[in-house]
Image: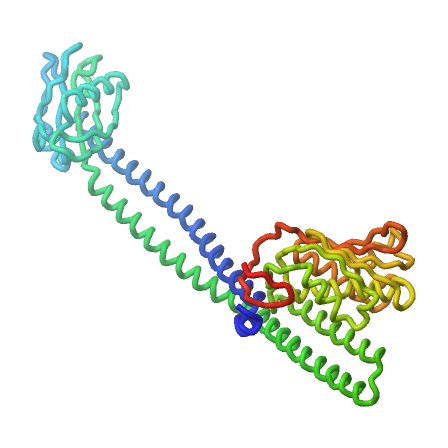
Length: 433
């Protein structure tokens, strides 16, 4: 993808805003879903506990009431006749009476609707012993012999001072579980619908919230494009006028420098605003430096010593950084024509001048905008150098040169991270991947 294709595509800043909008929609939906899930779980547990409590109350009350209807006479005979007329007995789904002599296995009497509706013998024996241990009504869940899960309640029938029998009442769990499952399905369906509605509302609200930002980005990109055109056109015209009215090397040099400065500032503005992305390619750093120095108006006093070096970078930005370093050395490194030495080694570009240097306390300050080596001003050269170094995960600094002068270093990692977007942009020293 070349720069013209990049310009026609959505800007990186707009793409980031759209990704942020999708992320906000996702977070809004996820937060809503989490809240609804918590509420649904609470509702499901409350419903389950309520249904279980209702069943326990129903079978427990029925068993306790029927246990008071039957009775032992003085001869120890259990009378079950009242069960035939009691409304509680007629409304029971499963009804049985367990009777046992002390230390004996209980026998089953008066089973309604049939023996297969009761649990197996071992389970009945456990229920009986639970009644003896608790000395009151017990409730358990157990499957019937014929299948199906039931909730049971067993209430003791006293024969004097001992428990001689127990009334066993059971009710099926299937209907209650079916109603509970239906509630769960409706909750799941309702929560899904609400999450979808929340996602749609969140997407709409985030879109409205970001609309001014997108509009501002569009206006900024349009301004930068118009500024680039409006600034480059008079500079080109000024250069023609200077050449036509008697070429002046100094005037041409200033026009060229101003043109490069405007181009660099506009490129920086577009990158920092997100209107353009940095395009990194594998390139020959030594060839790029040599080409950049040869294009300078006053390159006769500049010597280049370079080793073959391949880095990952943006050719235009690196060329601008190298150009700024060399022009800074030419401008502040002594009288006009003072020698400047440029060296390229693996991961490092150094530019040496023979000027007075920069005090140690000011070596960081000169990389700020509006500060030059001679003090406050309108300089942006070294600030751009450090900015370009940061974009390439590198560094820029000033040190004392051996034997006097100043040494400016642009250090680039040789194991730079892969580019965020592929590019076929060709420039000086570009290497095929």
